[in-house]
Amino acid sequence: MSRIIRNLVSLALLLTAMSVQAAPSSFDLVGPRLSVAVTRDGSTLPLEWVPNLAEGDRVAIKLDLPAGQSDRFRLVAAFLRGAVDRPPDAWFHDTVSGKTKGGDLSLVVPKGAQQLVLFVLPERGAGRNAIVSAVRKQPGTFVRAVQDLNQAALDRARLDTFLDLLFRIGRQDPDSVNAASQVLTRSLAIKLKTECLQQPPELQAACLTGDRETLLFADTHSSALADTLTGAPVDLAFQLSATPQGGYGSYSSYIGVVRDILRLFGAFQSSQLRFVPALARMGDGRLTLLLNTPLSFAKPASVMVVGLPAIEAAKPPPLQAAAGVPLLCAAPDTVLPVEGAPLVYATRYAHDMVLRVAPDGAAGFDLPVHADARRGGFVLDRALPDRSAGATIDARIAGRWGFTPFDGPRFKLSDPRVNRWTAAPRASLVVGRSNAVTLTGEGAGCIDGITMQRGDAAAQAVSWKQDDANTIVVDVPLDKATPGTVTLTVTARAPAPPVSIVLPALQEVGRIDGVAYAAGDESAVLTGSRLDQVREVRAGKATWRPGALTRAAGADRLTLLPVDPAAAQVLTAGERIVADVTF
Image (cartoon, rainbow, N blue to C red; front, side):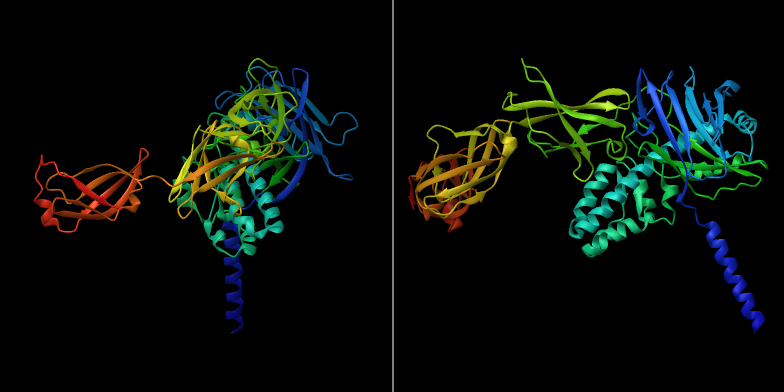
């Protein structure tokens, strides 16, 4: 019996080991940190602000190790120039951390280079020549690995931003997790399972942030594929992928990249070196390397491989205004909704962002804005200056994408100091029905609400909509009202004062425009006004009762249904008959 038990335990341990071995490893091990800065045309930015490198850039790289670190590391930087073009020896640079002299790298991007890859390994693990030999033997494999690692790091940035924001929202206000997650998934182009949102509010954030396997990246072109893969037992690290389409910010079909990286890395292992993919997490001006396997200081020594941004022409983000954006208000805390570029939220690539206002015939000015993934756009940080910019303002988002200036989408906004509205001359309301009142003026984007007050009664809120920049349409319900006056009050955001408009509410005089009946029809049509008061219509020997009432072009149209269809059928075409209408 004891032998059977031992065998069962051994079998269980073997199955557990096989399960652990089969499970994909997540990138949750924190490795060394790198400080990387890029200088272009006399301006220097940390790498986390730089979406692409360019020929002639100076790249300063320093390996940041914890104080008291006894082991020294070798840092090798290599420029690549294509899958079938081996880089020359002069494109490899190396240094060793902890040296009295050196320890840092200062490189100039050479002409013709397309990529920059960093290798970090224990000093005694191997020398520069081993790295040079491996890269020159299989340049295409390293080119592909660098591309995929760089893109995977960008996707990881989106994921980290999503989890961090959602976790904080869940702790502060659990009831808002559902709504917040919908905005965040749109802002960061993330797809997630909806089962979490069907749980009680206090459990939603934990569900969404606790199991990374429920999260998928997708865009509108890959949602079908993502739906197919939702719930697949794959660690999130293996779901990180993206290929730039028209700039860093538009993503293609999801999945497979990190798996491909692991296959690629398996292709060029040797008895001397063991290449390990490292995702670069950007923040605080440094890169923190995330690993999916522990480092080995013995033979074969681990070599961490880090992909840096491509060396290419700048590609500003495909940022655009969200669909259906109405006239907005040029006041602090206003959100300018945008879409199409999730990296404006997940990275520092977009910086020095402003709302650029250029009034006709006047000097322009900039208002600072900041990206907020929780609100789905750029948030205005400052009020308009004292000088006038016009009641309706044409402006656009602008800023820098790394080193490159770029212009974003345009918006129309209202000056919050302007709130002017009037009704048409001799305009009036009609009691007994709902009235659509058109007001013309300026300041529609800054309206907070509209109320109506009948006589001395309490004011009540009414619905309204923007028709265009200078027109709003107010719904005034007077179905059960009596004649008198109605005061409409339009309240706008400070500092503009509210505006009140007094309109007479009148009893509409009933009138009859005509009765139309085609011989053989089952109904007739009565046109005029106040037809809601019609009791019956007699024409010859036929009697009709009221049916459906509609209103079009300022007139009522009342469908008349015959009391006796046979009597109505007696009427012949061309016959002229006097109709009696009873109200």
